[in-house]
Length: 194
Ligand SMILES: NC(=O)c1ccc[n+]([C@@H]2O[C@H](COP(=O)([O-])OP(=O)(O)OC[C@H]3O[C@@H](n4cnc5c(N)ncnc54)[C@H](OP(=O)(O)O)[C@@H]3O)[C@@H](O)[C@H]2O)c1
Image (cartoon, rainbow, N blue to C red; front, side):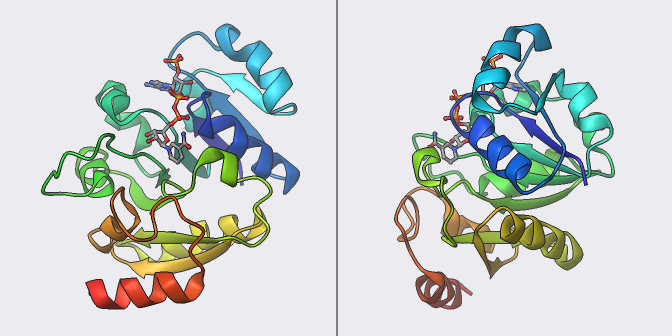
Protein backbone atom coordinates (compact mmCIF):
# COMPACT_ATOMS: atom_id res chain seq x y z
CA UNK A 1 0.00 0.00 0.00
CA UNK A 2 1.45 3.32 -1.08
CA UNK A 3 1.25 6.17 1.42
CA UNK A 4 0.77 9.82 0.46
CA UNK A 5 1.73 12.33 3.11
CA UNK A 6 0.41 15.83 2.48
CA UNK A 7 2.49 18.25 4.50
CA UNK A 8 6.26 18.44 4.68
CA UNK A 9 6.53 20.48 7.88
CA UNK A 10 6.86 19.06 11.38
CA UNK A 11 4.49 16.10 11.26
CA UNK A 12 4.63 14.98 7.63
CA UNK A 13 8.29 13.90 7.50
CA UNK A 14 7.98 11.99 10.80
CA UNK A 15 5.00 10.01 9.51
CA UNK A 16 6.85 9.48 6.23
CA UNK A 17 9.93 8.14 8.07
CA UNK A 18 7.88 5.76 10.18
CA UNK A 19 6.02 4.46 7.13
CA UNK A 20 9.26 4.03 5.17
CA UNK A 21 10.85 2.17 8.08
CA UNK A 22 7.87 -0.19 8.09
CA UNK A 23 8.40 -0.89 4.38
CA UNK A 24 5.69 1.28 2.81
CA UNK A 25 6.46 3.29 -0.32
CA UNK A 26 5.86 6.96 0.49
CA UNK A 27 5.24 10.11 -1.53
CA UNK A 28 5.32 13.42 0.31
CA UNK A 29 3.98 16.78 -0.82
CA UNK A 30 3.93 20.39 0.25
CA UNK A 31 1.64 22.99 -1.19
CA UNK A 32 3.63 23.70 -4.32
CA UNK A 33 6.30 22.53 -6.70
CA UNK A 34 7.87 19.26 -5.46
CA UNK A 35 11.32 20.70 -6.24
CA UNK A 36 10.81 22.97 -3.20
CA UNK A 37 10.73 19.99 -0.83
CA UNK A 38 13.32 17.77 -2.48
CA UNK A 39 16.06 18.73 -0.03
CA UNK A 40 13.79 18.42 3.02
CA UNK A 41 12.72 15.00 1.77
CA UNK A 42 16.28 13.87 1.18
CA UNK A 43 17.33 14.84 4.71
CA UNK A 44 14.19 14.18 6.72
CA UNK A 45 12.57 11.28 4.94
CA UNK A 46 15.17 9.66 2.68
CA UNK A 47 13.50 7.19 0.39
CA UNK A 48 10.26 9.15 0.12
CA UNK A 49 9.40 10.66 -3.24
CA UNK A 50 8.85 14.41 -3.27
CA UNK A 51 5.68 14.91 -5.29
CA UNK A 52 2.90 17.32 -6.02
CA UNK A 53 -0.14 16.71 -3.83
CA UNK A 54 -2.13 15.53 -6.86
CA UNK A 55 0.52 13.00 -7.94
CA UNK A 56 1.06 11.76 -4.37
CA UNK A 57 -2.64 11.13 -3.85
CA UNK A 58 -3.37 9.69 -7.30
CA UNK A 59 -2.04 6.19 -6.66
CA UNK A 60 -2.01 6.16 -2.86
CA UNK A 61 -3.84 3.55 -0.81
CA UNK A 62 -3.75 5.79 2.24
CA UNK A 63 -3.41 9.57 2.44
CA UNK A 64 -2.28 11.35 5.60
CA UNK A 65 -3.38 14.98 5.91
CA UNK A 66 -0.64 16.73 7.87
CA UNK A 67 -1.27 20.31 6.80
CA UNK A 68 -2.43 23.31 8.83
CA UNK A 69 -6.18 23.36 9.36
CA UNK A 70 -6.46 26.81 7.81
CA UNK A 71 -5.01 25.36 4.58
CA UNK A 72 -7.48 22.49 4.36
CA UNK A 73 -9.74 24.59 2.13
CA UNK A 74 -6.95 24.76 -0.47
CA UNK A 75 -7.20 21.02 -1.20
CA UNK A 76 -9.20 19.98 -4.24
CA UNK A 77 -11.90 17.58 -2.92
CA UNK A 78 -12.12 15.58 -6.16
CA UNK A 79 -8.55 14.36 -5.67
CA UNK A 80 -9.70 12.31 -2.70
CA UNK A 81 -12.63 10.48 -4.27
CA UNK A 82 -12.39 6.81 -3.32
CA UNK A 83 -9.38 7.44 -1.07
CA UNK A 84 -8.75 6.43 2.51
CA UNK A 85 -7.74 9.61 4.33
CA UNK A 86 -6.20 9.95 7.78
CA UNK A 87 -6.91 13.36 9.23
CA UNK A 88 -4.04 14.33 11.52
CA UNK A 89 -5.04 18.01 11.62
CA UNK A 90 -6.08 20.20 14.51
CA UNK A 91 -7.89 23.45 14.64
CA UNK A 92 -5.47 25.60 16.57
CA UNK A 93 -6.21 27.47 18.72
CA UNK A 94 -9.36 25.43 19.40
CA UNK A 95 -12.35 27.52 18.33
CA UNK A 96 -15.23 25.60 19.93
CA UNK A 97 -16.61 24.70 16.48
CA UNK A 98 -19.82 22.61 16.49
CA UNK A 99 -18.17 19.80 14.50
CA UNK A 100 -14.80 18.12 14.98
CA UNK A 101 -12.24 18.74 12.24
CA UNK A 102 -12.59 15.22 10.87
CA UNK A 103 -16.35 15.57 10.55
CA UNK A 104 -15.71 18.70 8.52
CA UNK A 105 -13.08 16.86 6.48
CA UNK A 106 -15.52 14.03 5.78
CA UNK A 107 -18.22 16.52 4.77
CA UNK A 108 -15.94 18.36 2.33
CA UNK A 109 -14.11 15.27 0.99
CA UNK A 110 -17.43 13.53 0.45
CA UNK A 111 -15.97 10.83 -1.81
CA UNK A 112 -13.31 9.78 0.73
CA UNK A 113 -13.36 7.52 3.76
CA UNK A 114 -11.97 9.57 6.62
CA UNK A 115 -10.33 8.36 9.81
CA UNK A 116 -9.08 10.69 12.49
CA UNK A 117 -5.76 9.79 14.09
CA UNK A 118 -2.25 10.93 15.01
CA UNK A 119 -3.46 14.51 15.59
CA UNK A 120 -3.21 14.24 19.37
CA UNK A 121 0.49 13.27 19.46
CA UNK A 122 3.15 16.00 19.27
CA UNK A 123 5.46 15.33 16.36
CA UNK A 124 8.51 15.03 18.62
CA UNK A 125 6.69 12.30 20.60
CA UNK A 126 5.87 10.21 17.52
CA UNK A 127 9.38 8.88 17.22
CA UNK A 128 10.15 6.27 18.34
CA UNK A 129 6.53 5.14 18.51
CA UNK A 130 7.44 2.39 21.01
CA UNK A 131 3.92 1.00 21.09
CA UNK A 132 2.48 4.33 22.21
CA UNK A 133 -1.32 4.34 22.28
CA UNK A 134 -2.92 6.41 19.52
CA UNK A 135 -6.62 6.89 19.20
CA UNK A 136 -8.46 6.49 15.94
CA UNK A 137 -12.00 7.34 15.05
CA UNK A 138 -14.08 6.79 11.96
CA UNK A 139 -17.53 6.03 10.64
CA UNK A 140 -16.43 3.25 8.28
CA UNK A 141 -15.29 0.19 10.26
CA UNK A 142 -13.36 -1.29 7.32
CA UNK A 143 -11.45 1.97 6.85
CA UNK A 144 -10.72 2.10 10.56
CA UNK A 145 -9.37 -1.46 10.37
CA UNK A 146 -6.97 -0.55 7.54
CA UNK A 147 -5.72 2.51 9.41
CA UNK A 148 -5.37 0.53 12.65
CA UNK A 149 -3.26 -2.02 10.86
CA UNK A 150 -1.13 0.75 9.30
CA UNK A 151 -0.62 2.39 12.72
CA UNK A 152 0.34 -0.94 14.23
CA UNK A 153 2.83 -1.62 11.47
CA UNK A 154 4.52 1.72 11.98
CA UNK A 155 4.87 1.04 15.69
CA UNK A 156 1.84 2.41 17.55
CA UNK A 157 -0.85 0.74 19.63
CA UNK A 158 -4.05 1.82 17.85
CA UNK A 159 -7.09 2.31 20.10
CA UNK A 160 -10.50 2.66 18.46
CA UNK A 161 -12.52 5.37 20.19
CA UNK A 162 -15.66 5.31 18.04
CA UNK A 163 -17.18 7.34 15.23
CA UNK A 164 -15.82 10.55 13.73
CA UNK A 165 -18.08 12.43 16.15
CA UNK A 166 -16.44 10.56 19.05
CA UNK A 167 -13.12 11.62 17.53
CA UNK A 168 -13.58 14.91 19.36
CA UNK A 169 -12.01 12.99 22.23
CA UNK A 170 -8.74 13.28 20.33
CA UNK A 171 -8.94 17.03 19.87
CA UNK A 172 -7.22 19.88 21.74
CA UNK A 173 -8.62 20.31 25.23
CA UNK A 174 -9.38 16.62 25.71
CA UNK A 175 -7.69 14.70 28.56
CA UNK A 176 -5.79 12.54 26.06
CA UNK A 177 -4.56 15.37 23.83
CA UNK A 178 -0.80 15.84 23.89
CA UNK A 179 -0.24 13.49 26.82
CA UNK A 180 1.14 9.97 26.87
CA UNK A 181 -2.21 8.37 27.69
CA UNK A 182 -2.34 4.59 27.56
CA UNK A 183 -4.99 2.29 26.13
CA UNK A 184 -7.00 2.18 29.42
CA UNK A 185 -7.34 5.99 29.52
CA UNK A 186 -8.45 6.14 25.88
CA UNK A 187 -11.00 3.41 26.46
CA UNK A 188 -12.27 4.98 29.69
CA UNK A 189 -12.74 8.45 28.21
CA UNK A 190 -14.23 7.07 24.99
CA UNK A 191 -16.79 5.14 27.06
CA UNK A 192 -17.66 8.25 29.07
CA UNK A 193 -18.15 10.21 25.84
CA UNK A 194 -20.44 7.65 24.18
N1 LIG B 1 3.23 19.97 15.23
C1 LIG B 1 2.74 18.92 15.90
O1 LIG B 1 3.35 18.42 16.88
C2 LIG B 1 1.44 18.29 15.47
C3 LIG B 1 1.11 17.03 15.99
C4 LIG B 1 -0.05 16.40 15.53
C5 LIG B 1 -0.86 17.02 14.57
N2 LIG B 1 -0.50 18.26 14.12
C6 LIG B 1 -1.36 18.86 13.08
O2 LIG B 1 -0.78 18.48 11.82
C7 LIG B 1 -0.91 19.53 10.88
C8 LIG B 1 0.48 19.94 10.39
O3 LIG B 1 1.22 20.44 11.48
P1 LIG B 1 2.76 20.81 11.30
O4 LIG B 1 3.21 21.26 12.65
O5 LIG B 1 3.47 19.71 10.61
O6 LIG B 1 2.64 22.08 10.32
P2 LIG B 1 3.80 22.84 9.57
O7 LIG B 1 5.13 22.51 10.18
O8 LIG B 1 3.38 24.27 9.49
O9 LIG B 1 3.81 22.21 8.09
C9 LIG B 1 2.72 22.37 7.26
C10 LIG B 1 3.02 21.71 5.92
O10 LIG B 1 1.77 21.65 5.19
C11 LIG B 1 2.06 21.98 3.85
N3 LIG B 1 0.84 22.39 3.14
C12 LIG B 1 0.09 23.48 3.31
N4 LIG B 1 -0.94 23.47 2.44
C13 LIG B 1 -0.81 22.34 1.70
C14 LIG B 1 -1.54 21.77 0.62
N5 LIG B 1 -2.65 22.36 0.15
N6 LIG B 1 -1.11 20.58 0.09
C15 LIG B 1 0.00 19.97 0.57
N7 LIG B 1 0.75 20.48 1.60
C16 LIG B 1 0.34 21.65 2.15
C17 LIG B 1 3.07 23.09 3.96
O11 LIG B 1 3.70 23.25 2.72
P3 LIG B 1 4.14 24.72 2.19
O12 LIG B 1 5.31 25.12 3.04
O13 LIG B 1 4.46 24.44 0.77
O14 LIG B 1 2.94 25.61 2.39
C18 LIG B 1 3.99 22.48 5.04
O15 LIG B 1 4.88 21.56 4.45
C19 LIG B 1 -1.67 20.66 11.60
O16 LIG B 1 -3.03 20.55 11.30
C20 LIG B 1 -1.41 20.37 13.08
O17 LIG B 1 -2.44 20.85 13.92
C21 LIG B 1 0.63 18.90 14.53
